[in-house]
Image (cartoon, rainbow, N blue to C red; front, side, top):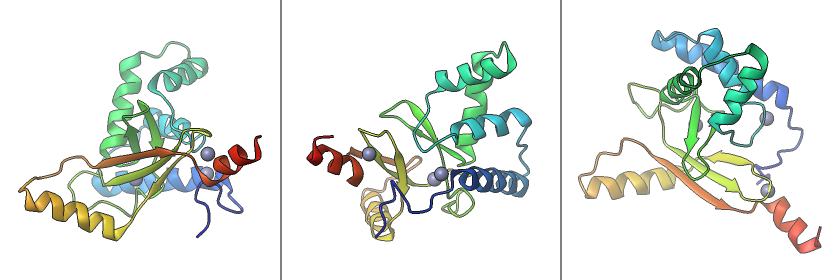
Length: 171
Ligand SMILES: [Zn+2]
Ligand SMILES: [Zn+2]
Ligand SMILES: [Zn+2]
């Protein structure tokens, strides 16, 4: 299996374009509006594969547009999270774009979906992963307890393969 933290031939400009296209499609399907501001916030979240904090996003927007009130950014982030276009990582208090927004909806009304992340503590990259067996095990566990899951974000933190190598090499 390829290292998902450093996929070969990764073309980030096309990551961003396909995320924006998927966002337009998802919003159109649900009758939601991807306003220019929401779209721009999504694009800023997607500037890389490292989670971004709300304050950093606010600073980037203020740099572009002058005065921007913090609630404007929070509301845009709330919207993007509700639509499953962005995930909030509680352990980092930061946001990351979802590369699978158009595919995963888990049959829910809104766009939120189960999201499982591997987060590298060294390079800061977070990768969303999906495993049918894990999904099944969690559904089974919750079902047995009669528990209805409303938010399922799992954050596993550690070190990616490249960062472990650097550690070994003493770099
Ligand atoms: Zn990318
Ligand atoms: Zn996702
Ligand atoms: Zn790493």
